[in-house]
Length: 133
Length: 114
Image (cartoon, rainbow over all chains, first blue to last red; front, side, top):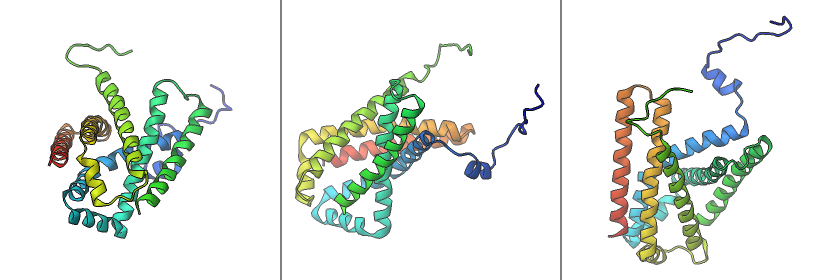
């Protein structure tokens, strides 16, 4: 054992502080955890979204009530968050499908596609936001 | 390499594959719906109603809903397996997820063929 090697204290236990401020996720890691979080969000919202689909197709008045509700600030922010979640889940999912096929697994490409996924999903969200409201 | 007895369980390949196939189905549906909606005319009630009155979109939406059901089950089960360790709590949440998924499917059919 070389004396020149500085041994880090081991084992290192994960604290909330470590999780939040010490461990820096690389970009592909962010894409990955956001894929999971966006998927969870979409699952939790599925009944609400289905309720809105139901109302909007039930009658003219129902359609208008959904449209009016979508204009309320809190609802609008929630819907935009869900639109982002869908876009991110979509883009990141396509990236993962390519990774499954061994495409883009080298570090440089993986980083590049991570940036593309993060930027594209935000851009798509902005575009859909403009289209919807 | 861990020695495992193969009998009695599959190794998750079916779910792994299903998650990806259903993802592809939903991706195609998403693009089709976007093309159908973002085209030109503003979405009013008659436009919206007419779109979902067509047979092909009802069937496509049902395909989407079935894909979503399977896909979200695999995804939610993955999340529960990773973070919820007590067997009782995990089972309870898994049942809750399945109930939501089954309810969603039934409701979707009801909405589409009213």
